[in-house]
Image (cartoon, rainbow over all chains, first blue to last red):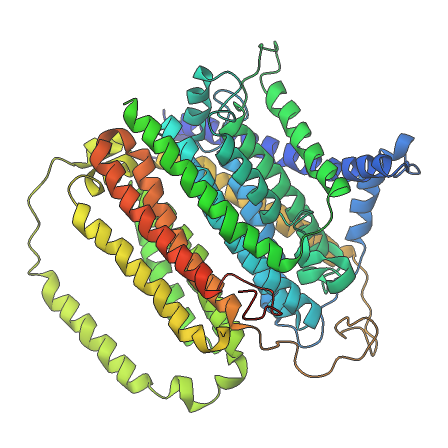
Length: 337
Length: 168
Length: 126
């Protein structure tokens, strides 16, 4: 069989077409995600600015619309400084782990009915698994930098992230019980019977999840790892240039991921009160923008927690509440079986 | 499962473990172990054991390795690794490991395949392995399961006892 | 199963390629200079002394240990949640005992003060 026959035998073309479709889908998702990350920074600066009676960025483009792009281009020209005494390979790889964990977790989120990159059966567990890798980005960055601020920030942050991970995993158990599946498309379909989604039968779980999501993404009121006034920038104090940008992007990807999980598990995913023609993903994105705004709103409103309060909140309130929610939901489900 | 994929995974798992063992820097070894766990998880995925693959990453890569890192950072091992304290026992370790490996080779010929239950690969694939695992674990293996919870309780108490002096 | 894994693999490599591209491009066009203090870790303008890898509180180790244990328990709970319909009342009672043991461990930690982080507490306050 010569080369020509190999390429054009039936089946191979099929596979190539399929692979192309997969590739296009992946490129679209990554592209849309990066665009959202870029403009989430602009959105944050604008909304916080207006909440503080400022205008926010105004110089680059109309109403500062091109500001995030200018920032992004500028970062390419910045120097990537490695502190003396740093553990080089680990210093290099830590931000990559951070961004990789967030970006891959998004691959199992259904954007609308039938559009999901990897429709795997354990979707929700996959997200938990990937976000559990976030702790490494933080820990390794702080350890490798050979700087005291970084080290203390990473210690704090990793203890916080792993504590709230348990609460987050447990808060999603209610959703798993209600839908009987870990596949995110199935979870969205199971919510059709509940107008609006699982957020009202699973109110307790939703609350625990949202608090844990804020802590997992290191956002205010739980932004202790990067508490500027005491730790400069926490675990990425020593990072500069593109690697700093990777951490920054990872934070926003984390926010988008947490919002998407909340939407998919509690707010009916791609479903809305009425169907919008031609744009099946419209509801999902509207909900996403609302959640992103919520992150900024809370940042502008609530002061930072103290570290002992933060750990107490996670272990003494959220985990018992999540367990209570599990037992309650389980009882109802077994009674109605 | 695709034999090439399996070959790659098997080689990568063995290779990564070997490289991890020979690292002088324990943090590098931990990182290599995490990559190795990912290969193991893909191996499980290919065999249709999705839940196990997720557990592999969540528990081993996500939790136990974090604990390792904390211990390494707490002991600041980077300076102590040069001494005999952590590396002195290698002849014993190697002889024990090779003894176990020899035992494994001898035993593989004598392993009897268990009788086939109702859970064939098709059944598990149709109802997802998470569901199959749960329904067996919570109906047939009640006692061992409760025992597991007590073992975990013992672990909590053990950790506290080790650190108690510092707590008070 | 492998059918569903392909998209995941493609996406994995795409993300890696994007990150590599970003770092590679900034490596090529980014500026570079080396002076006496370039590699100095930032300490608010003061020359750092001693090692940066400070000894830290044993509580951090304890939290990591509890994390492993509670993470395991939550996975058990998840496998029960998925098989809720199959296991029925027997499963519910079983998980009730399981969660009770978990809560007992939590209460034990709580009473012992392993979850308190404020250092300034006196015996009376406890």
